[in-house]
Length: 303
Image 1 (cartoon, helix red, strand yellow):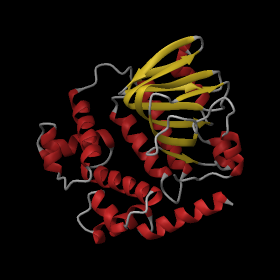
Image 2 (tube, rainbow, N blue to C red; image 1 turned 135 degrees about the vertical axis):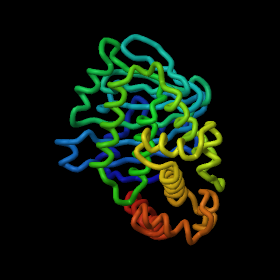
Image 3 (tube, rainbow, N blue to C red; image 1 turned 30 degrees about the vertical axis):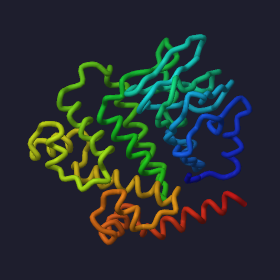
């Protein structure tokens, strides 16, 4: 687990009414913490907590107050929420936006996998009022390529040793702008094809994929698929796949003791040399340097 935090924000995170460190969270889960700069606090929408949780049916969180907005996307299973005197459910493929400054309870209906971002600052108050309206919360199918791409980018950024809160803020604005501009209905066939391709890459990134193979999965020609993918995500399919592999490699370097050679293989790189070169281009250091920096941060946090 990477920790970009210090004692101040860690103390803030402890919640006597049930925080995210309670039971039901499986070992494969990850959480990343970040202490924002003074500039971020005064000018940006900033993410303080970002995580990907895998939980069993015992997972439940109850809080009277937590001074953040929560954006969560359920990847599999389902969750229940009790908020403003109402109980409702959010299932796989749906996004929820919740004002955690009010009393709230949520948990797993059964086993669940979900990604979450706790954020505040900037125009987050105004966006929340715009999206939540009279309900006091916001839910919608998370089929938008823009939303999925932005969330993936945030996870890539928070696992980087050179955390860039400005770029994270940009991605949060992308998500909020997309959610406010779409009603979640009538997703186009083209959009669905790109989402299908992204899901396929996320499940098969460790294999030796070609763009032609990915295009075949969505029944499109390689040329048309590449153009469509770039139009929807602002990057080529190859760039997205490499970014996904690098993100997974960062996580393995941080939370496992696997060798660089083994991680290169598990993340779909043809050779260790190719992996090291690509990692340096994207992260600015070698995999070993990245792991060493992560270990140093852990030692500092333990003091």
